[in-house]
Length: 124
Image (cartoon, rainbow, N blue to C red; front, side):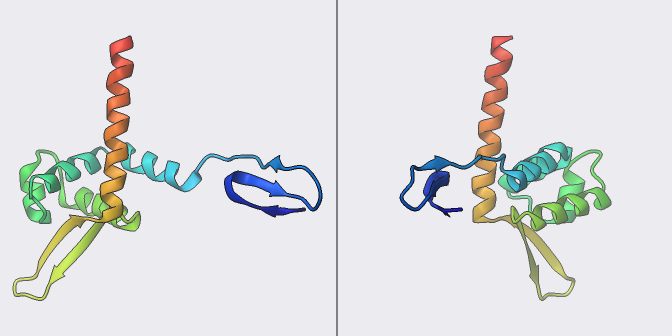
């Protein structure tokens, strides 16, 4: 087999170029599904955009949000690299969450999905 180059071309010795099969982006698709499937992630992003970045304040700000569910949501977002946990060495302990650079890019994609949804709804 030949060497795979840019854009999926396979370079064969003294032969023509062929395309390799393109596959769906598994990891990014799973990430979008997990985040969009979690009804609280989008709410957490809205809270962070409004400057509410401490877990206790988040729970108090949203009816129906529990500490357990929030912690699961935050953990998932940290694992994906969307959010970052910042711990301060204070008494009492203080923890805040912020959006990473990657998280900002990811949220732009979610905004585009929302625009697409509105366009689809207008057509119906």
